[in-house]
Amino acid sequence: MSIGHTLLGLLESGPRHGYDLKRAFDEKFGHDRPLHYGQVYSTMSRLLKNGLVEVDGIEAGGGPERKRYAITDAGVTDVERWLATPEKPEEYLQSTLYTKVVLALLTHRNAGDVLDSQRSEHLRSMRILTDRKRHGDLADQLVCDHALFHLEADLRWLELTAARLDKLRAEVAE
Amino acid sequence: MNAPAAPAGSLLTAEELRKAYGPTLALDGAGFSIHPGEVVAVMGPSGSGKSTLLHCLAGIVPPDSGSIMYAGREMATMNDAERSALRRSEFGFVFQFGQLVPELTCVENVALPLRLNGTSRKEAEKTALDWMRRLEVDDLAKKRPGEVSGGQGQRVAVARSLVTGPRVLFADEPTGALDSLNGERVMELLTDAARSTNAAVVLVTHEARVAAYSDREIVVRDGKSRDMERAV
Ligand SMILES: Nc1ncnc2c1ncn2[C@@H]1O[C@H](COP(=O)(O)OP(=O)(O)OP(=O)(O)O)[C@@H](O)[C@H]1O
Ligand SMILES: [Mg+2]
Image (cartoon, rainbow over all chains, first blue to last red):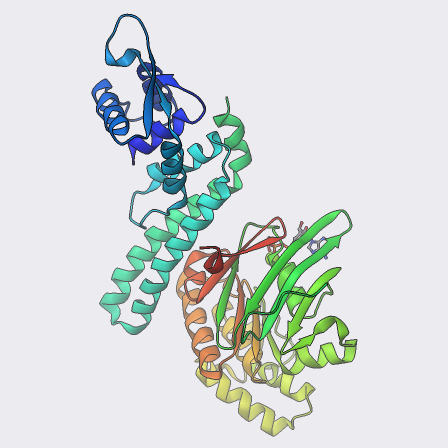
């Protein structure tokens, strides 16, 4: 999962301090793995260097967590591009996909589009596997089936998520 | 106002379809297009309008508005007799539950569409048996639908849908009642058969592994369709 894009997405609703960013991230996406402050600073300094965020003010007291960051136009474009680009179908995509859907909802983009383009990308892989299965021997078939079932599991989760988008939107907005 | 031109070479094209059932807007501007020999999956959540779209495309249900062109002709301009002739000879149908006639044997079921078109019994059953062989169910010819398994019955239904050599095969959840092994076998046989006759297949399914037998997919949501290939 891309921490940089996630932090950028969180900045879209308005400037935030470093500590506030970490808190928002942990609350929404970091249930199992909260961010270290070190990760926040190294990510933010990279985003600064690349012109995707700018420093919007510094609170008295110093320390990097006191900096207030704002997203730049280039940063918004970057989030936009990330959300629009489907992930390569691999196993254990769940956390990235979840993050994309929640961020799309938080930033009032169309989360259904994220799901549709990911389904399309998954199906592309599944067609290739299905074709290989049809023309292969039994060993090929078993290997392809294993991959197909995993991709299907991703998609079933996607469909279920899509069916619950309205509920998720309400919860995410809290 | 001019309707937008149909994609070049397409056999069946629909645009701006609207269909309401009382207060329910089942289709709300849906579109569709398919080429000969192409398998297009229609996906989307339950109640989104997939079956309604299929019924409109097949001339079973008239849309309230919008255009459906089949082989260069606007369906709305055909009369009922023309539309039902189209369904009998140009279109084939497979549904979730085979819908075989229980009183007839399997081979009689498969031969039925040909018989309805006036083919002699002998001729019809010979062609029927050829198709049953391709679907690997010719050994069930003399059995009645009640005496065969769900997967076998579904293959018989696929044979029946193809026996008239349709140019478009409409399949609504054709594997919905089957386990994955039988479902995949039906998909394999169905798409092989359709490819060999250059028939177009409109495949409604919510299962990704079934949709993986298609060439491309459209997604229907709230009565609106999205062509994932052209959306990119
Ligand atoms: N004959 C009918 N009379 C009244 N309402 C109908 C009729 N057919 C469909 N509808 C309604 O139109 C909407 C679309 O139904 P449709 O059967 O096309 O959905 P679907 O996408 O095929 O769903 P599923 O995946 O559950 O089969 C639904 O709200 C349904 O209740
Ligand atoms: Mg349906």
